[in-house]
Image 1 (cartoon, one colour):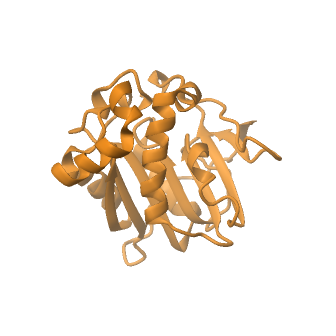
Image 2 (cartoon, rainbow, N blue to C red):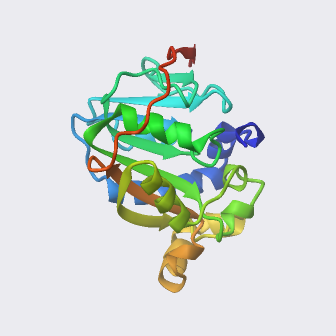
Length: 234
């Protein structure tokens, strides 16, 4: 699925993409208001959102799976971006306090292996925040946006997928009630407020799920360890 996604950078640089990014960023900031001295990993195309916490975090790293290609991060300063295989993340166990998955789950070549790696590199008291196109929403069917490519999920499907891979769902949220078209996005705040008040979360454009590691469940069965390598620094 991942190879179908193109133009993520161009999308977020466009007026429509910038508007959508602002609406999603508001919900992410509400979920994680402050993350002082935390180590944060963004997987997928998370760079536009890592800046929410960059000033206060210990470090923010943006990892793009190989199928998505290079995405520079940050816009200023030394690079903190890399490209790597999603099923073999190049980090030691228990490295990160928070992991943000945006444009990652729906484009994953193998969601099971990706989530197993996320579980491995997340600290035992860490949190994972997953953003995925809601299959019942308009954005999952809008092929002129990145959210219209890959595998969409219902909010319930995201939760069940995480549970099967040894996470415990803590909270749920939603975003992008605004229709994915220019006139609506230009008045995004108004339409977002109307949609959030009028429509149930199952019809939102994006499902947002926060989870923690389920330490009472069995430790994931490991496969023989493979060499973890960075394919290309951004």
